[in-house]
Length: 109
Picture (tube, rainbow, N blue to C red):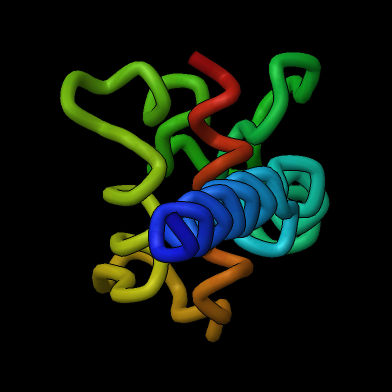
């Protein structure tokens, strides 16, 4: 009987710990920070908000267009941001900044 009680207690502790980890904002990307980053680093070339009139160049797609591309999700956007292509400058984003920026972009779907 003691073994079953110990097992139940261990299972409850694991479920509680898992629920805390899943709900913790430490592990989640922050779209609000992503929006701030977009204004700082991206709006010179991209339309980053629905209210922005136009960017300085027409060579970069609006963020809403990127968000609506088939098969695009936050993980793919973050990966792209960490390994930019020749037309895009290397902004030296950290992984969490890339995740935040990607999380913001997908909110524009």
